[in-house]
Length: 149
Image (cartoon, rainbow, N blue to C red; front, side):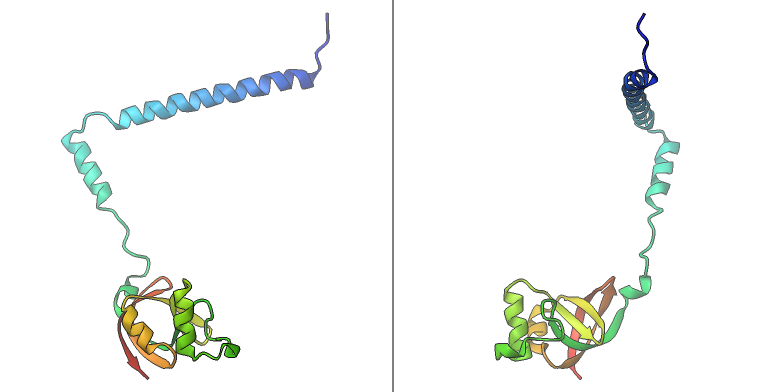
């Protein structure tokens, strides 16, 4: 009679237990999907409608209202510091970076916001300080108007 070590028993039993657990998980998952996809009664339809109506409001609803921001319109490649050795103005450097795939941003001190909308006006107002109005969502401002400061 050959003696088996506990390591060999474990090496054989562990994969078998994992396979059995996976099979049970698949069986339970299929059963729960089948029970959820049964015929829809009026009560079930009402429950689904209540679930659909429970969508959470935006995390910061105040941000959807227009706000006023001030700063410098530039690009997210150079930010507030353009390369002075390029012999380009701030506006020209911003336009060159945009042609290479950069995005408009508004910089005010250490804060910056990505700008969306009104691309023609953003190009005309890039460089000097401006005041713009728009709705803030996350770190993006959807611009509705721009004026010189």
